[in-house]
Image 1: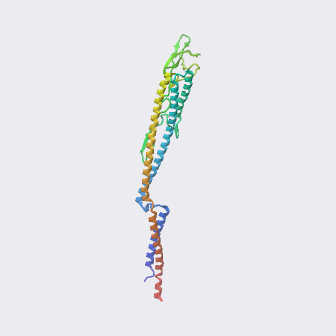
Image 2: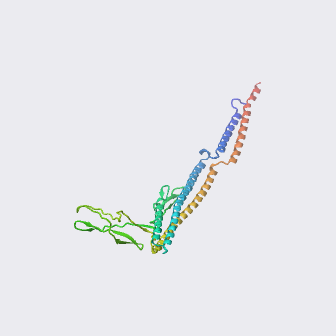
Length: 338
């Protein structure tokens, strides 16, 4: 028997340290909920888990992107829905004007409303925007919607110009007049006023109720601007014209074509929205499955770990008791010395 080195106590102490370390690790896993809390717990598992976490977060953000894309499409489609309503009202007015029970004054009143509605269609196309981006003025072209967790996983969308001119319910023509007559000493000119004849642009001659005196020498440069009788510059705006029965019939066809064009654009946006809704469902499904796989790698099995903790805790208590017994062993040497 030896008293300088108590091998039984040393062995019991070593086992107690091992058991206490295992208890500490089990407590850490149970309190954090993770099987891997540091690289030393599972180096390969940690690397795989982090890669999966990056994919999961990318998928979740892609799903959010797709939801934002749907909001943009709904904004544009809502504006086109209002455009549809306006066109239907314009068609009603054209049909009403096509009836010869209306006199000229009646058709002028109907035309006044048509003009306002046509202007509103153009205003809607210019002012409809999402996050400061114009949607219906032809500037929204080849816009990229990123709907994946990795690079280059995207789709593109273009929205056509839905203004009054684009759908043919409003047209503007600018007519220049530069036919000047020259004479000895003074210059004279006659300015023609343009009118609409049977839905086409025609001309007639009219004398302006006033004149301009232009002073200068032969080397002078003179700018001449055509103006109407009130001396204000103007352009000719055409499109839906229901001033007569014939023109009203033509306008009905024009408006029908506009309605079809808006319907086509709305159908395209609706199909795109449906696609994005399926994209979101797929992204959420992939994210769920990848997260499940990542959980199996990184998360702790609470029942199994609790069982391990209980075992290590009992072993630790047993080792502690055995250490106490081992420390009592050298006391027997004293009996030999008596």
